[in-house]
Length: 165
Image (cartoon, rainbow, N blue to C red; front, side, top):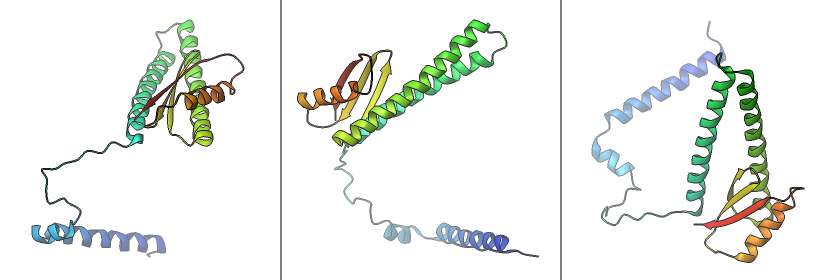
């Protein structure tokens, strides 16, 4: 007996199969007419870098480093040969990483809400480095960002702001 869920699955699967067979049997001329967005002059390739591209690259690099550090610490914690002190240090480092991630999110959210700018923050102890995606390099804006971020903390932090395109 076929219920509604199985009927929908069979219907959608059939549609996907028919479309894939149709696509595979199409000639190159038909495909060329469908693909209208290809440029006709390939000699003039232009690369456009958005402000967010550099931030995305920095965030990906930061996240990759954080993930590798977390996996190393987890390996130490799960290791049978590691001492109790090494496991405790690894656990404390994991807690520090989690705390720093939440602080970074808070900093980036604050900059986005107050100054309408995309940013990435990195934290190393008391040092906070903030990279702002902006074409204009404004010292008063940087000072205002430093003041607003310092207001998030009770103790003094060494905050640097870098403008990057």
